[in-house]
Image (cartoon, rainbow, N blue to C red; front, top):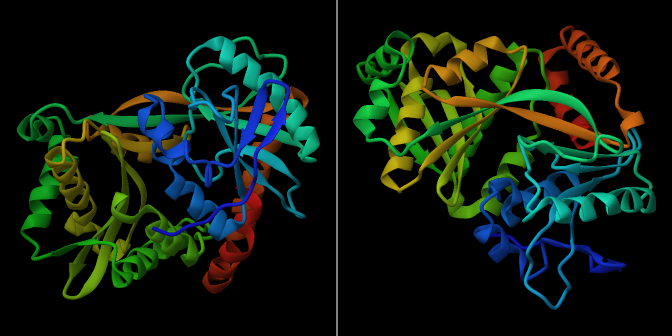
Length: 358
């Protein structure tokens, strides 16, 4: 595990701002709170800071001398290109408020506008599956995604029978007959293999890949809580996925493949390996992450594993900073521009731009 940190404690009335990378209470609090996820963990936050320079901070009603009982977690994003903002959290599927009741949430959210203005930020963004009751005047719905989770508490046999017969089970059996070599771990060669596959996948979609340093830092920061799984055909990596563990949940976060070999069924085989490992370790859930509502193919793929979906809402405040039409237009324009950019320039664009879009 690597060490990193930054911000000291700042107090404003009854709301306190802390640095989750250095506050000794943070790790235990995240381990205890039922709504906490791997994205609240110090490892994930450390990787964000090392790679993109984001500054993690949390607001709480707990005194510095008391155990933590609640918190809203953010990263302070500063960019000369896209402006400053408080995001909970950049490049993160979801980041639930860690509160005990609506009163705590109201007190923390009431303070956010003060903090936002003090830091010179344009807006605050929160990503949650719940509704922010009573804050319609200060927060507005910015976007809605689909969040899929697979219940792992059944037996392996029951789980397997719940997969789609043709699109999942048949492809797993097909992959097992192809002489594929399976490797898992956190070694540098596996990180490089996964990254190469992610680049191939991103370039097929004309989307800049994340910088290689992000994956290096994520593996270094998460330690034993991250695992890379790669399938090889005759020594060549053809599919790979990255998962993370927190509590009773395994999180699928990244994946890539060489489309030339997609017919071999390597990706379903890797997910089945991950599910078996999660079940063996006593995990109760596989978090398959969020999907754009328009990405019907990805949604269908996740549901063919038997995963259930719930809406995942992105809230932004002040409310007058939200323009869903303008946000969608920016995305469509970015995709149109990237569609005509050579592959090497797309990789370079990823290295330069990602820190500005978190």
